[in-house]
Image (cartoon, rainbow, N blue to C red; front, side, top):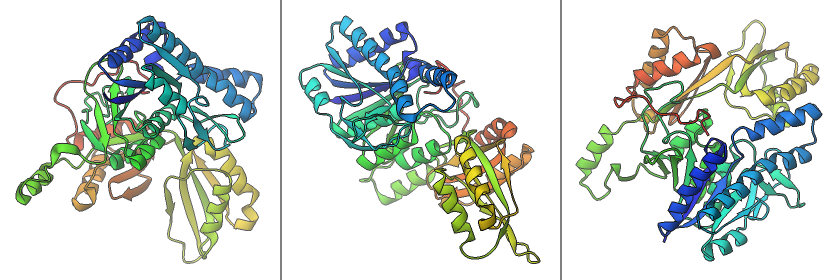
Length: 434
């Protein structure tokens, strides 16, 4: 008997019919002899609708009250799903994040898990019942309800899988797995059968929305196998683990292992992100400590920095420019914090650009394969797309370009690295990517 944790996103439980369909899948998993714990998101666009409703009341809702409001969406889903499963003759019981033992820090809106104590979930499973847990939420040490931020239900599922020592965590979404690119942008994208935690981390950090970054981090830390699948089909999805699996047999002769490694594709996929903006600090004194002070201010504003580029200083002025990218939501506070300390920091001005897009090419072994960068930049050149910023790691190359050229850039790179599928177009069942 296996212990399976399943997570269903908002597109999978968007209405009563969808909830009944999901209930049948869960009941079938239970009747197959498995213990089952389910994490569920709010129905469809409920979270966005609740945010809009709060905005109609006040432009700055208190974060504590906003968290209480937003967690109601998942509570609706969990109770309806428990009803649907019970109606199929399988016992089920629903739990809030607090009841499930998901302990967080006290940062409302984007709380981080500090402990998972799933006593009630374990007791429910031991009684032969399906435990349904509201995703995206927990409770702080002061007994306040908190939310985990976007993608929080993925994190909830992986955390529970780790806490319960589950055999697998299945993340159900509206596509058949992890693809070499967003199939909404590249219809010829190919499904990846297996991907490593490191590659999935880079894809998620670079904008791939099929699996939340924090969930992948948690899975890697606790070695939780994650199976990304579609709730709309029975297609085998993508397994995210610590290795590429059976591609290389460790007991095979060395020459055979080397041949397998040489033939293995090094590119996992192309990710893109439209959620970032660029700030350029113009005319910065090029002397020790200045950059450190600038980014201390940025950190104090709570901004998450992605890419950073500093130009060579002009010899006759001793000044340089520093550009960095950050989420749109972090931009207003960061600009205000920098402007407030302009005299102390000594820069001339700030430039803000929210019309950028980031493209990332991800693949294990890229560093040891010459020509990858040249091939990427050549494909962008041939497509007439200009590059504004470049960032690299051992398994990723990221570039910033104009937002209106991003889709063309993704398609050009996908084709240039022979990632297009020969099996027809990928299927997107619901259209949200979650």
